[in-house]
Image (tube, rainbow, N blue to C red; front, side):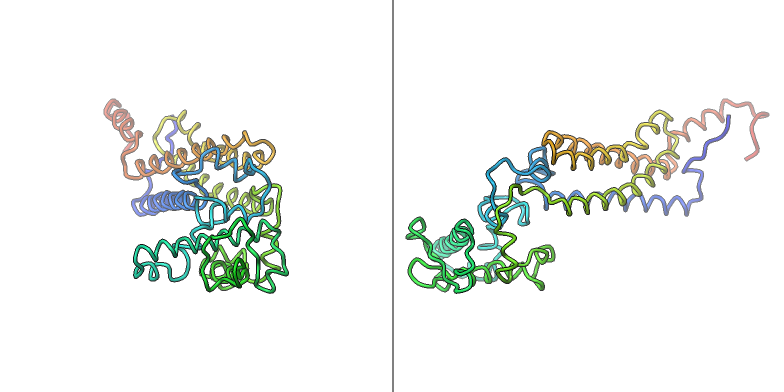
Length: 323
């Protein structure tokens, strides 16, 4: 019987390099999961579930709204283009921590009401069509529905009127500008009406746009294909049974193909969101098997060592090859 190559037969220094690669690959994948949690998962979810995936790729089941309206109305979620922008008026606004630290309870409650009034005023402007004239003159009438709602005095143009341009500059432009504090927010600048206009336009769906989906697809296909191919080759050089290697070796590659394919299919039928969840889970489990199996073998603890030891003991001395 022809001897098969195994990782444990490699020199110690090469096994050390390969073990470090597997560990770093696992760490990188874990970091990617953390990013997915913060960027895409719904509140209370560790990772995006079928409903959240359906919303990202197929669009929400709701009446058409502009992106800014949706972000201003959302009560919870990550502070990004798929979540909410409520914290921009409070805990994520400039100087909030220092401001609330020295306020008594009554003043703090008043401050919270005024910041909520800012959010409602900006939302009212967006719902009213985000008129350029009111933006340019920095004067938007709130209307009777917001009568009595406190608003930060410095942002009032008069009784029942708010300085909408100043409001956007104070609460949004600090991040949403070319030199904003948050790198991702710089991609959606709001410093000027022409830059605001695309974000207040009502769209039929809030799902991931095609250009971004195409960019994400090619990055994942190329990067993960190389990663899974490398870890899969190492896994197939362990002493595990051949049947296990035939199944687990290509598993992450196949699962990732299903996962990414369902991104696109979800735009056609939201039911394919389940394929995204199942494919992603299978790819993660397959990678975990690659890493653990490879590390076990590289440490000299592979199943093949036990089997070879038994074969060595049972083989007559005369038939043994010199070591």
